[in-house]
Length: 584
Image 1 (tube, helix red, strand yellow):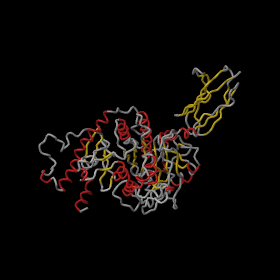
Image 2 (cartoon, rainbow, N blue to C red):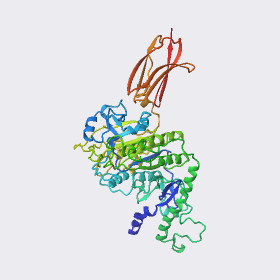
Image 3 (cartoon, rainbow, N blue to C red):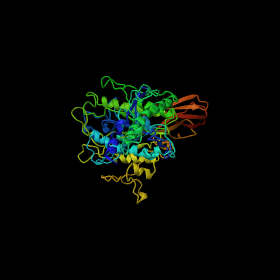
Image 4 (cartoon, helix red, strand yellow):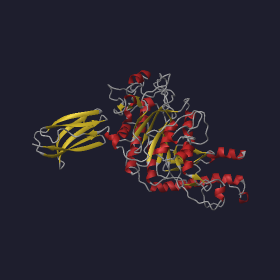
């Protein structure tokens, strides 16, 4: 490749970024489907979708996932910002009492919506995610986690870009474009959509050519008034060279860029068509943080992004990967309110993430899309274990990642409070590429051959029994299989049944009394009522708030006539009923 071609390719991403809006969200088209960069949907074998939620700025993992068994150590490291464990109206929410003690965490009190998702088997927590030699740099950290390499790699492509390159084979420039025998089996939608003003490295392919389409948060209108789209004009206002230069490299390269601009209009029309086929959501996505602190509250910038993703998918959009973003996590100072560590800027952000994800899952379920979509969070690093004197936290290393969706394998992976040798940072327990690779393998159903191209040498070719092995990068990271996503969605009834249940009462048949046995994993309101066979309520057996645990409640049956009855438990989302026979 000559120098001019290399320079052209380096500048291409900027030249290819053509802004427009649709329904108030500004978009930028990135080169995917103009005549010179058509994509053939040859390798795509499923309709699964991945949503990546970027928590921009470095989320404080310890104040959203509080260690239960090691709470004393946690509190001593950050006494001015620690979330209370007891003796407070706002204290951490125990996530799962059935886990081994070393894995048990409590969620920030404003993350109650995540607790609901977890109890329904729709959330996974992966603790201690990072990369070796994490230096706490925002920019370098984002580049590394987006490119899918190690700390000393400088790849020019992103891991999602490499994935899409395998799913949708690009037509080669210029030979395929000039060959009339090459079939056109095109992907009519953007391969990826990024909400925000930039195109992240995560979507770049080899040669610096991104495969995404970017939107800002304002909306989606039309772009009939954009310069260059006046089709009735005799002269193109954008400066295409005259026809006699059409065989020159300059002509071909400039036309390549300008064709991308033309495709922006095609994308606008396509997405407007998609939106016209779907209705606005009926689900409430909370807009405001419900408390007055921080002053003026913080508006939820994530809600409209997720609402748009759900609506696009409902309208038939075939885009495979979406990147949504929420910022504000660089909390060096005033992370919490001085008078209440459970409130403040970080609390508002966690409320927005939790409530938006709960609404998004409800929206997908209502639209019949829940089986197709998995969401994965990412942040360039976490925060230090120790707080600072400014009621904040400084740049750290490892932190939690969250996975949401019906296809998640629910649970908590990793220890809740594993620190490095100095105790200043949470220790890395999982390389971030290990998480990505397992999601690609199980959820997006990428085979081992293609997985190797996304994460170079991710499998040991000499020993297939080892499964995921080494990335082949300079840090020698070893991959392992992790239970993060379901290859085939079979439901989470077993997970839920281990945490919530109504057991058979004893004795049954009963005469004067029986004992009801139930189990809950959350401090929900619990009701157990007794009904006749025709649905008439005759007795309240249990009515109150119960902490996580197993309970046996004796109930008096005297005065009730003999016959068949139904006793029913309701707690939060969970409901179960069983039969009781009363004899005299």
